[in-house]
Image (cartoon, rainbow, N blue to C red; front, side, top):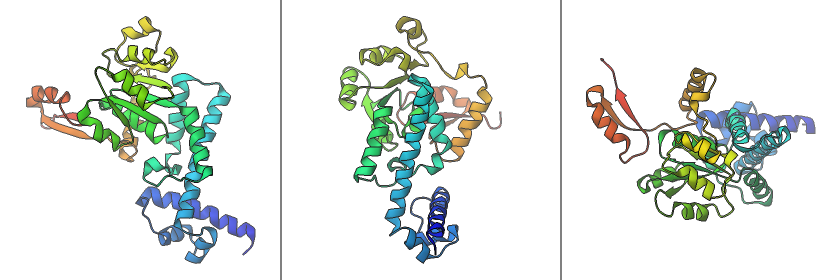
Length: 290
């Protein structure tokens, strides 16, 4: 077999691995990957010394893809929340190719991988979500984590363990929250999304976040008062398409949308009270039969 054929087989194995992992999960055996690629086990091991070598290559390529996205954003001169939005959209578009530690694989510790991660983290810095356990905050936090962003989220202490399971670094609301955020992000916070209100935008300013990198979708008076953004769903040109896109992400398993309680329409008051109660997820009001 010539070198060109060997390289072609190696690329075929990589593409097949991505397809099988997306379909069956990370524990898929080497034999299944080889079968998907249409090569024998021997050909697989000529391209990769073992399964770990393949996973290493997939992880390095994922880092390189994210670095490429960040470079394109820099070249376009995008900054602030616009840059973060562009990064998320681009990362989601290739999410099936992003074999990363936060997707369930072990992080690489060799110098090449560490260098790539540090480069990505330097560009992304840290993103703060106020109200990370709420419906909107939890969804946005997942998308950011999935795109490789370090996310710190404020939430009630009862929700901390659940947020950690999704790769979100929780801090508690209340007195001392600014100091807790500084401890969690000693190098500073790059951007701040407020989905909670109650003075969170003021905390962002106190943390030194630039006003054009702060967005509150609930405290609408803060825009004029602090010079920050108040950009939410109501400003989308096509809300229906956004909802359909989001439903597709949920259906594909890229975003979790847990339901913590379900009530019949006759118990709407109980449903309303449950919104502020313990548990992560949405409260569903069942209108079947109405």
